[in-house]
Image 1 (cartoon, rainbow, N blue to C red):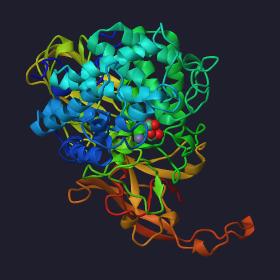
Image 2: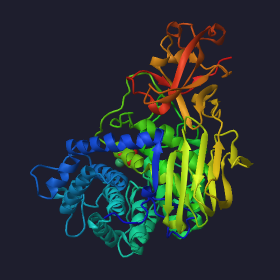
Image 3: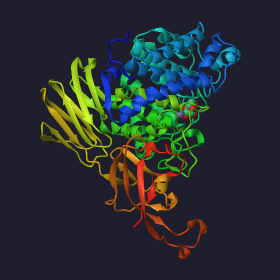
Image 4: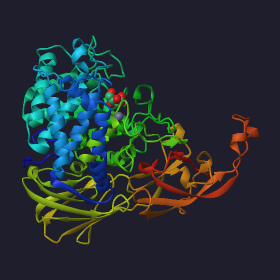
Length: 626
Ligand code: FUB
Ligand code: ZN
């Protein structure tokens, strides 16, 4: 029987330094619109296709091999188990809302074989069983053993919350106990080159009440930047300085962002000021100097790393899907420390752009890198040799309803707008119902109906909105973009709240320090970033296309037959008709041939939907012409 309590991804109900408690996955239902469509496609197509991929990639067969149930040998990269665990987590969140018996059969089978693979002492990692047994914990920098444990544990927590069953929790706890013996206060200093276990251990603590898991997570944060180093002392592994002294986001982006998310979980439990000082400095660095307009993070191919401030190349953007997801996870935790709209704004931008771009519209093909420009030939793939991104997409989309609402003792917060319903929040102490009707993100008109009672409704007014109109029963109420509008009253049955967020087509400019985007503009409408694909500018080379400064000729129109139904933007752009291919690469300024303009009809489509009509060229940023 599923448990009666709420089932959120991050459970801060008992966390002393959490201002907010997330609403449960089962308490929120998505009723329609883009997010609901992406959510259902993930469940009906993405997760089932993922199950097949786990078999073909050896991820699941490896567990059968090490548990002695099948002949063969373990194959795949060192972190291959984590792909399976992330998928399992997604299947559990999906099962929590669907109660689908096929999903449950897959979950049961996978859980059984993981349990069968686990050794008596708690160890389970298919790569380091059998002939590689002697190598266990000999390479904390690169082996990913503790990282895989982290994903196992997050899957176990999801499994427990979705099914009420103890089996996978037992596996995770036995492994956690082994790690505690090895790396807890009585053991040696140790942590993983790839953070992840910090978040997982703290969630395990929240689920079990067992304080030593929190202690171990804390020690893993403290293990970084020690002298002599516990890892290799490198920036890549975030081991260059003690965590509390780190002020700049450097190194491998996914590792860094998972570490920041884990440290935020730690803050939620301990309230330690030094941790929050570091987290705020890092947030500022990441979200004011190192994030793409799409919410993509980690600019560099080299080391899958953050670039220097404002180093945000478009064609060579790395922007790994996992990094956008990791940024989403981090902001979610910060939002529960302090309900500031900037965190939810960052989540929203990442979700509608750099995360949704990571998966095809049919839900079964994925991007690892999410560039903001392509010269053609770049397409999504069904799986990867290093398959971290696909199941990260699965688990994020499968838990989507859990990110819409949170509560505190007297308030219901609405963070992300989608046609949805929140029913009853145990954290709030009594039953509350909030119904949202909207065609967001295509429309900024949002209607909310709430159940009677005295409480506050806190509505995020996105920072991207130049203005907002908020009315309760027709009466205007103050709503400032970039904040939560607080509506406190004794709500009556027929009360209606209406939020109107204007969504004009906007030309976005980058800080001129972003050299690649200097003198350029990108189109946004609401939280959605747009791009032009080759097929939508048939008589122009995208490299020669310029954006008019005056966008009054650009018009948004919904096209239900295109890309699963999208708001498009159409208008006139300018094409430089000088044949640049015949021009020298460099000429004296006096010999430079100025552009000669021709007008050209162009259609922009949401960035997330690109590369679903072939692998043509694509661009987000265009130089601004006269
Ligand atoms: O190392 C495991 C995963 O592979 C990371 O999270 C990704 O960035 C990729 O390097
Ligand atoms: Zn990835």
